[in-house]
Every structure is written in structure tokens, then in C-alpha cells.
Image (tube, rainbow, N blue to C red; front, top):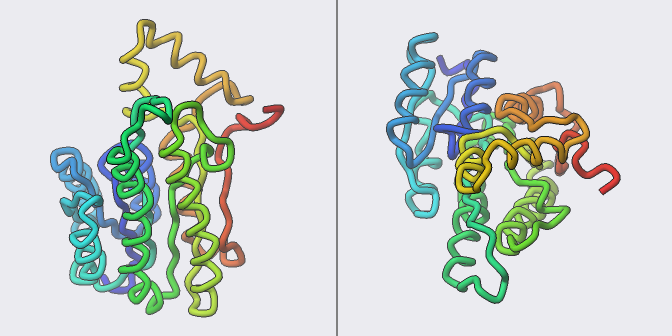
Amino acid sequence: MKNIPVVLITGAAQGIGAGCARVFHQAGWNVIIVDIDRERGEELSERFNGDRPESAVFLFCDVAALDSLQALVGDCEQWFGRLDCLVNNAGIHPPATPTVEMSLAEVERVLRVNFLSTFAGCQAAIPLLCKTHGTIVNISSMTAVLGQHQSVAYSASKGAQVSLTKSLAIELGPLGVRVNAVLPSNIDTPLMHSWANSLPDPASALDRVAQLQVLGRMGTADEIGHIAFFLASPASSFITGQAIEAEGGASLDY
């Protein structure tokens, strides 16, 4: 079992995180699912173990509790004996709020969940990844490079993830650890549908979002998972410090 590569994914119970978990598991990896959604996380873990016994484990953790997150990551070798990839996916996106109306407490919360948890996870994982010459994949957002109306804190947190990715790649490259980021645009996830359902005409809202991509559709969680897996695999062995824009052409002719 110790020869099977292991990935730890935060926010893996649904959405992009679950897409990453599915792709890695289908490729034969063992998967550590980390989330605050115990029900969905345990269900996904049980499904994986049904397909391949003892190939997945669910661990409850609120990534905003940085000490708990670091303890979990630092001790994750107990489950499968190694760590080959950390996918920092957990994050929040507050409702659209004008900057002058956003409290500093909310800004701090967004930065803690989206950026500080990424930093803390990386910090705890580095000693383990140095043993396996592993990888880190940070799930950022196209808002990091394009910005987003009335989402200053969110965009800033995602931009910080990209800067962390580049600086950490410089630091860890000589140690054999690669660090990259994925910047999705609009992805068809439960969070996207939750946002649409808060509007008067959810179907029209989702259609408008789909048409923002030149491909005429939103991406899928598994498509982002395949990009994350590529960045974790030997197929990308000469790629580090990069922010891969997975945006279906949404930024073209912007």
C-alpha cells in the first residue's frame, strides 16, 4: 500500500474538490478527503472504498482552524504511509458586497479560509512532500487575474494564492517539490446552482454564465480535476510555479 501515491484534498466533499478526488482515485491513487461536510465526505469515501477497498479516508476539518489543519496534514502519513500531492481547494465566496460595506471581520474571514489555510496546508505538507518529491496544486480562480465586481476580498485572496504558488515553487524546486495553481472560470457545481437559485430566474442566470465562455458552457468539476491530476503527475514534470487558466476562453476578447 505504501507504494500507491496519496493525495490530500481540502474541500473535497463536493464541487471541484470532489471532482479532483474522483479523478485521482480513478487513476489509482489513495485519497484523503478533508471537509466540514461530514455526510457528503463520508459518502464519497465509502463510494471509493466500495470500488477499491482501503483506498480513501474522510477527515473532518474546518480549514479556518489553522492549527487543526496543520496537525491533520502533518500527521496524514498515518493513513497511507506517505503524501504525494496536496490539493488546496477549500474556499468560500461571500455574496457580492460593495467594498465600503464589507466589514474587516468578513475580509479577515475570507483571507483566513481562502489564503491562510492554503499557506498553513503547504507549510505542514512540505516535510512530507520532500520525501516523495511530490507536488502542491492550489485551486485559485480567474478572479485572481481579472478581478470581480464587488468581490474585492475574494479576488485578493485568490491572487494571494497565485503569488504564494510562484514564490513557493522557487523555494521548493531545489528540493524536488513542484507547486502550481489552477484558475477556473465558471464551473458547474452545487455552489454555482445555489447562487443561481437565489435569483428570480435561475435558468436564465445559468445560461448567461454559460455563455461567458467561448465554448458556450460551464466547465465541470472533473475537468478541473483532470488538470489538477496532470499537474500532480510525471506528465507535467517540467512545469512549476504556473497559474493554469482553465476558463473555456472566457477571458478572450475580454
